[in-house]
Length: 447
Ligand code: PMP
Ligand code: GLN
Image (cartoon, rainbow, N blue to C red):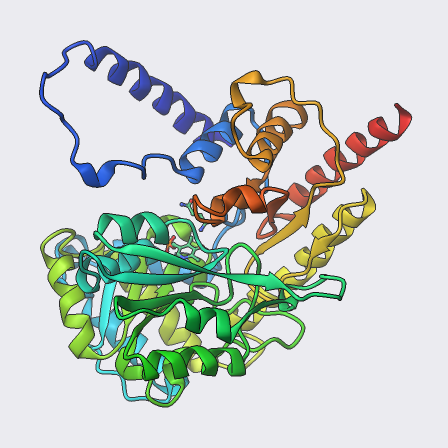
């Protein structure tokens, strides 16, 4: 909380300075057009609000507990590892990291990954996504995005000059929708969105915010369309180790004919519970990756050396322990399985029906049954879930994220009755959230 308060104070200061700077206006248009329409950001807005109101934070997706000891020790060792650890390393990825990623993922993808050709280390998965869109999408290209989607895909397509085209995951009809697996993608609907301008399909499995883990058959259907129409696939797999109830994560790049056309995106932050390190990567055939490297070398150049070294050591360890109970890739989902159950039971306890995620660390719930009298007239033009979450933070001290933020501007109004809870949190944080929910529901029933 200390860091968040500090952050809130810094932000307030920056706001004051920027208001002052506005007084010296220039007569010409300052901004580049690509900044238009992409200025709102749910993380910026709600992280600040949660900090301002000192809310119990089940909003932004980051662990509020320490990363595992082996990875923090690896980081400390790197930092005290002599001068080279503090200087530039190879632009496209620290050699130790690309080698350990290649070794680790070759056996999973079933393809010999060349550490120096087929991998680009990036500043988090965010920059891997940014490089993919900048390097591979031209003006006028269409990019198909499956809704709901991690919010940055849409502005990144727009900033590249492309056109985002959406295809929804829809709740299965005629059954109670209790699990993320009940949300499905129609092959016909997806196929109907493909035009001669389509360049790529973006998928995210396990999905944020829903927690859907795509089944092999679903991925095969997407792969068949990519191959038939000669499309690229951007597969965001930052939660790849977090699956529950026997759901299996499958890499679309491992399906026949897909390695050659898929960019797989991963995150050291999500993998080792250290989101602030911002080490990510893109993996795929060198003939695609080379264009992403061009964007990277001319923008970021490279990422923090010591953090890359530590993530490399983490993957070396996981390579040794793969499939054993000591592997963090088994321990983290086992722990989160409990947290998922705990959060679900808190929600059910106050009459909210969660959609159980098969993967990831988020859970969404329908809030349409809750009647709230919003007094805040400033927010009256906003989507219902945005108003609801603001009210929840300000009036009840609990931060979550509105799910319509994960829908396109065109469709967000239709999906504004869900909110997202994050459960990669200490038990004590989940307990505090439960207390708030309980108190609230008791107050409601006594009225
Ligand atoms: N993709 C998804 C689906 C995410 O949830 C996130 C947020 N962590 C990212 C990409 C960005 O990851 P990173 O923090 O490694 O930049
Ligand atoms: N990926 C994280 C989430 O979905 C956080 C992203 C961010 O803070 N920009 O909560």
